Length: 590
Image (tube, rainbow, N blue to C red; front, side):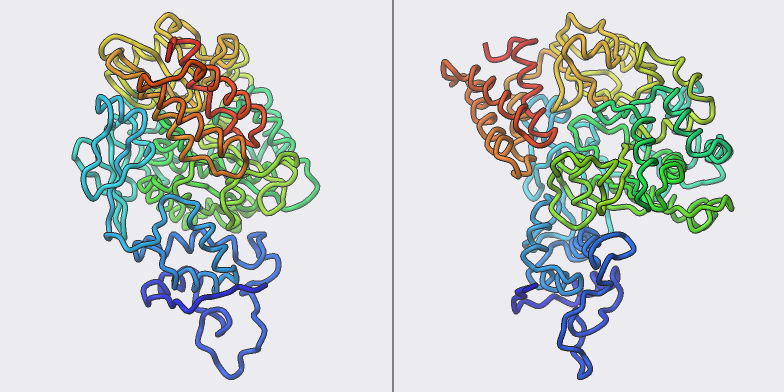
């Protein structure tokens, strides 16, 4: 392979950032000092199928890029060369991966930078366009919707989340602001019952509140017993697709190729979504236990938490919890003395909404651009590193704990119809108390909004599912929030976004922001999405500004049909959903 290195050299700070993560280079051929004994053949460090399943150490490309970007503030051509040398990846490919992500910079910038959310919930809170102060950067949704309008300050060894000008330093064990979970302390909660009750950094607190009872029951049931309980519970995925969890776990466990892989999708970049962030910040050990159960059940000895790059507080808190778990023997070569190995590795995303798609996550972890793969083959057969892989999001996995503690049939008794258990909804926008709410399936949209303090002003619409979702009109609020009721009404629950718009919101400009979001976030891999999202934004801008042409509504319909039918992943397929829904349900652009 011709790596084609340029003459650019890394700075000492860049070299140290890489070496601190990878260790010192083994020879001059991999970035070290050239010695007389060096062989004249470049050998990739850790060449062959590495322990993590990748070729050489390419799977470390994203962490290495983060290390340089975090330490120095940007990634220079010399750093690109050095990273390529250390990982034996062509510099053009290093740059191609790094440039895929919004959080990496290729020019010098200040040690700290402030991202200003200009997305949907913050537009509502700001009453329109969000002002971006000089020196700050406009950003898609930061997942801080309960604190809208929100900003996030990121930089070298520092991170702050800011709302209304009040910074909050990121510290291990710091719980999310009380406003994030207005129900905190309610003993009737299931998934949120420990929020505000335990210290997120304390394993003893977690155990005192029932922690690791579910893992011991899993061990007594055996893998088939765990899968049977999941199947009896009726649990379906909480990330939007609503695929039966028991079927997915059984499919992975049954694959003869070993080992298997486990990925927890915590890249919740859907505008308006922040429920997984709250669980990670307030109850990290619940996810560690749930991932351990999942790994043991499906035959994975390692799990990856793919974490949204902007979630600095969640990163600090979860990594602190991992360190405690390893030191106390609940992660590692012999989990709790029960005879099986399992550990968890955090992989930070870097600002790419498409990496919420399950196969794009695989490419990102493996050190490639985060572009989706064609299916089939499906992840349960050929996933991360070509191995059978279980992918679930945070909320789905944490539901496994109450299922094992109370039994699948008891879990299924909560909810409505085939929508079993409780659901976390991220409520934001024109409501009195934005935050994450846990309610049984079957609660109506009206009841949930009332629980969140009611509508501030006169209701115009409710956006369900975020930018890729659909709208409810004021006359549809008595719809039960269940999968079957949503399907019957032609709407989607998605991952649980409930964004309330009062009559002060300019619906046309709101839809423009949705179109702009998808145009920006399209990975560009397939033509229908790459071109369709651009044309959709252009037409939406014309219509919202009153300059629409006679056939523009029909053109939006045609674009939507093409993207739904021909895009290779859910981003392109659902990019028109909210705009189409607004036109049919709310009469937008008439």
